[in-house]
Amino acid sequence: MPLPVAVLAASLTVACSPGADEPTAAAEGVVVDVIDGDTIEVDGVGRVRLVGVDTPEIGDCGYDEARDELADLVLGESVELVPGGVDDRDRYDRLLRYVDVDGRDAGLLLIEEGLAVSRYDSRDGYGEHTREREYVQADAGAVDERLCPAASERPGRGRSSAAVLSLSRHRQWRGAVQPGTVHA
Figure 1 (cartoon, one colour):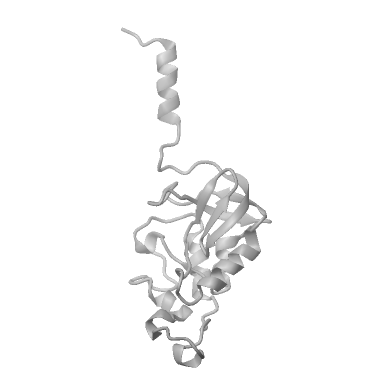
Figure 2 (tube, helix red, strand yellow):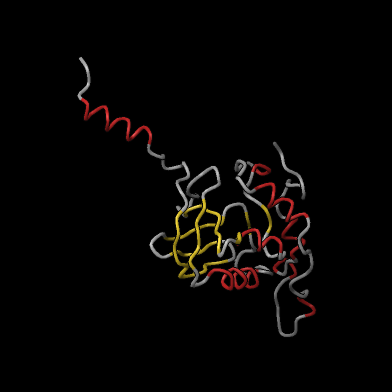
């Protein structure tokens, strides 16, 4: 027995709609908060994690610098949220997007400034994202200098040397990822 046209149309709509893990179209919004160096809050969208970059975590050397630079770039600005990763959301339900402000890629700028590393890509099991090659190349040529002095050089600070990371160590933290390489 043939299906009614309405049922067939509804089935096609569901089958052709993006799934929960499939990236959707680009969107725009105003950044209302910068959570850290690679996560922002966008009005009407929610939390957005920058695709393909990693910045130091809270308490690690370089955290404040990465967060502050991202805030300088995007806070209060209208940004374009561009899909390009394999997944639409991460395990924390943050939207995964490139963040472009005034035609500039915020993630790439952070990498070029030495405040982020190229990560969460085909080199470490997350699948290739559309700007991966550009990110990896920028990472290989990025500024690689100590952002924070060693604990012994900072008066009045009792932090262990393990907590005082240089950006160079943050780059090495990527594990098996070799700088400047892209796996097909």
